[in-house]
Image (cartoon, rainbow, N blue to C red; front, side):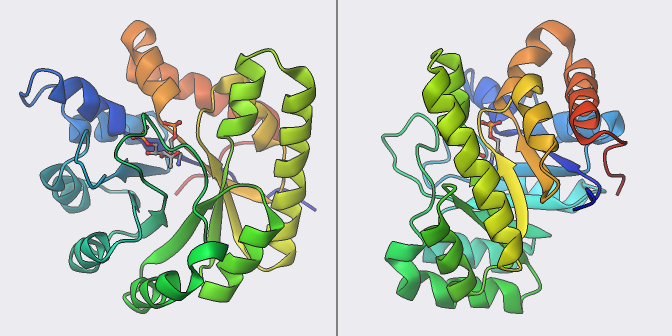
Length: 254
Ligand SMILES: CC(=O)[C@@H](O)[C@H](O)COP(=O)(O)O
Ligand SMILES: NCC(=O)COP(=O)(O)O
């Protein structure tokens, strides 16, 4: 399969985490998003959590109003969030699982276990012209459920693989990467667009970039953390270079 262009979605959640640490307005996620776009990001991702621990409603509204690239709104599949998305009309939404007590997204959306609730909400978002993605584990059961509820896109959760690498668990990492590779192929075979994200750094992003089925990576925490040392523009340029090496060609332009 020839590899199509690969997009980078920069997640600005943790710029808001830093801002909220002091309750002010600095650093501004919108300014970070504008810097990211200037550095070559193809889109911006932001997660409006039910507890608003980082991105807040006003951030999402300003991102939607001012961005010159697609906005991907991550959200739980709740009626509250669907209502906000239908009002805001971001380019895309990515439905993610949420638990207030979690530190970060811990697993993929259990689309298979909640098809009845998901289907009408996915359909309503699609009918509003919003591209809907489901953030799922690399599991064929979840891919089937994504098709069943009418979601055109899946974002494969790369967190378990990245954590296995960080823990030095080589066998578990190999097994997790194989699940991702098989799921990317399986998603394409089901007619789904394939994205990936969570926990990626330049090394792991380079590996995922080599999967021709994957057309978008959403990356946030590593970029914001690295920006403390190297600036956001520098961190993004390193990430784009890694994606390009992995892909063996130039990353997508909008
Ligand atoms: C779904 C996902 O992996 C992330 O984009 C998500 O935003 C993680 O949640 P936090 O950003 O709150 O860590
Ligand atoms: N959906 C993944 C995302 O947007 C960013 O995840 P992370 O890079 O912050 O772990």
